[in-house]
Image (cartoon, rainbow, N blue to C red):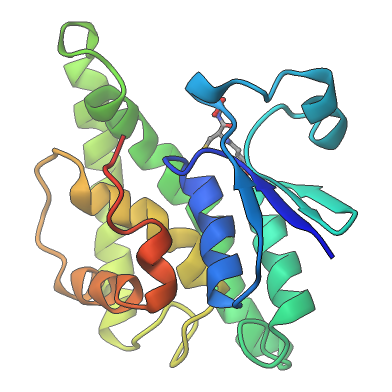
Length: 207
Ligand SMILES: N[C@@H](CCC(=O)N[C@@H](CS)C(=O)NCC(=O)O)C(=O)O
């Protein structure tokens, strides 16, 4: 049995997958790939992921890409009754946040992140950064209201939604930007990064 993850650890999408493997107690080997590490446009890599992005998982011959699909696969295969609740309604309540991370939160916050963290000060576009901040805050307000009533995104237990959204919110809370106080989001963030499995990303610099 071999399990391999490709992807650099400063990618939130790689963090999701590595965190899921850690949470499930799975053994794996990780190879850096993407950005400065290259690899993602080589023929061998494109044969695994024609999209040419990280992460990729090879779970003993089951080769997958798209981070949320990988997290769902790992949870379904190795976390039945835990990360993958048997009740479809319970599962779906956490799953909602995986799609929300990809379709709502990520597009809103990404320009601010790439502007403030991955762009040299003299090349930054302050208007784009401010527009991104202004789009992200209402989403955090909504998240804060949701988390006022429950400890985890899907309800009373840590789940796939927390795994998928956690690294992005962790980044937001650790990047150099002015933020509105969000007490329930901040308490949830502390709760999820306090899990032993979160050691794989919580202390890494935001780069
Ligand atoms: N929807 C994809 C997005 C994958 C993606 O955008 N990956 C980025 C890193 S977060 C990437 O590969 N960037 C190019 C690179 O690292 O070379 C997923 O969730 O896996």
